[in-house]
Structures are given as structure tokens and as C-alpha cells.
Length: 343
Image (cartoon, rainbow, N blue to C red; front, side, top):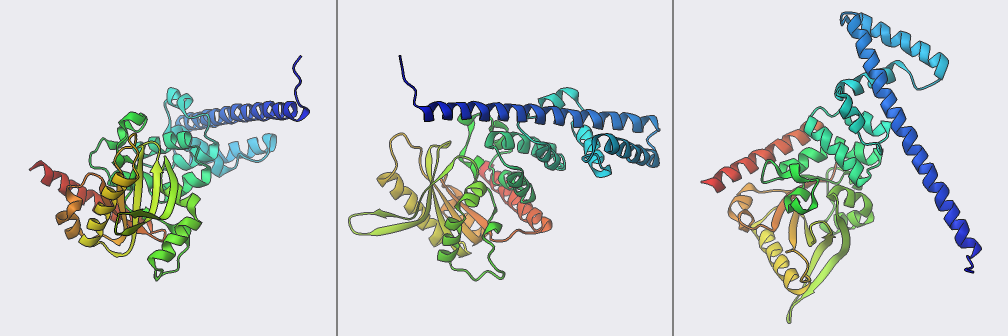
């Protein structure tokens, strides 16, 4: 007869209860999300009965809010009912409604349905579920145009279409331009040195990893690689377990130069020779610079190097206009690069 230690069986019972609570929470959450969609559907149908008059629709919401609040309590304010209505209009296909991720809370859906671009919306739905983003992380990624920054860094239009299959991932699926480090709370104008920014990134490693994206794990800071005669230090080194390769970062507080690209090229070659394991893919080098010089991008080793990238970082949260202009500029540059490559 086997003997089970008391603390072991207690731990097992706790686990059973925790799992049961989690299942119950997911079931309730899924039922509520479905209910909100159905309420939105009924609201829209009633508004249509009123021949789509704006004043009738407003009256419907006010009357419904008053009735539901008196019977069911809080949660059915005029603004919330408008959200239910928008939820249905965003996902008006019933099959689409039931296909919505059951793991996502109403707070997740409320944030995502405000994203106008359908492709971006689908991306945030998928990534939130797969990466288990909290509502706070999701809101931050939407506010910093995570999807569009990632898309602007791609070298082909269909880059993100394969993101559900790991085998089809490419390295450009993981590189954004620009990166946004608003979580560092650096005062403006920026006077911090490279070492100070590097230190701040490490002190905020969790947020830094979230900004980098999925699959990244921290390896080290100022990682030394040595030859018989010299020592070199790489600012930041990560390993991406999806790409199965090391990712090297070199931080620059000034405009990109051709010396920077040559230095990172050397780091990549040395790291692959001295550190990379046989099962690893070739290392990737990313130069994080305060400003990119497009002449350097066009005529340096960057143009042909498949493992070397230069991206801009923004140490503060830009305005929506600034971010849109930055992303649009990157898209134009990539388009020109593709056109030149095809000539």
C-alpha cells in the first residue's frame, strides 16, 4: 500500500480546485461575451424597426438601460449598451461570434473592436489568445500600433499571413520599426547615454520583452566575445526559441553610420563562429538607433545582408500622427527597396 504525504495530497486538492475555478470562470466569461453579442443584435434589430432614425435609436438605448439597471443592477449603462451594439456590428456574422476566443474577456473584446482595420483586429485577437496578453498589455500594443509597426518592417506583403504556423515564421515577422520604449520614462529632451538607456532597458526587462515580441528570452548584457588578441562586447543578447537563433542588439543614441553596420556585421560573424550551436539558425543583428540615415541603409552592407537590420527606437510614446508618419515613411522606403531589388 502506497503512502501519500499529507502535504502532497493537499497540494493536489488545491490544484483540482484551482482548475475547477478557472474552468468556471472561462465558462461564465464565454457566456457573458455571447450574451453581450446577442443583446447588441437585438438592439440593432429594434433600431431598424424604427427606420434607423437616430433619435429612435437613442431612445431605445436609454429605455433599455433604465429597465435592465433596475432589474439586473450595474453594467447596463447607456455607454455599455452602445458597446454591445458596436460588438455586434463589428462581428455581425453569428458563426464569427461563436468563433471568438473564449479565453478573451469582455475587456479584451472592447479594446479590439475599436480597431478599425479588420486585418489588425484579427491579428490582435489571435495574438492576445496565443500570447495570453493581459488587457493592459493589449491596450499598450494597440496604442503603440504594434501591428502596423510590425507590418512596416516586413519585406513582403504576406509576411503576417503565415503567423499561425511556426514553421513558416521568418525573421522579419519579429522585427518592428520603430520600437517604442515609453516605459523607460526618460525625460525629454533625451540626454541619456547609451549605457543609461541600456541599464534602463534591463531594469524594465519584462516590458522590454513584451515590446520585442514573442519567443524572446534574455541571455545577457555586455556579452563578451573574444579572439586570440581582442575582446568585444555586445550590448544586449537574446535568444528567440521560435526562430531558434540568437538576436544581438547594438544600441546607438546617434544617427546610424556605416561604421555601426560594419561593427554589427562583425559581431554576427564572430558570434556564429564562437557561440552558435549546430542546431541553431544563423544569428540576427539589430542596430537600435535614435535616427536612421537612409543613405547608409541604401549603400552600406545593410542592403544585402540578410541577418542585419537597423531600426529606430522612440524613448517616448509618440502621438498618433507622429507614429502614423513614421510607419508610412518606413513603408515607402521598403516599397522602393523592393522595386530596386526587382530591377
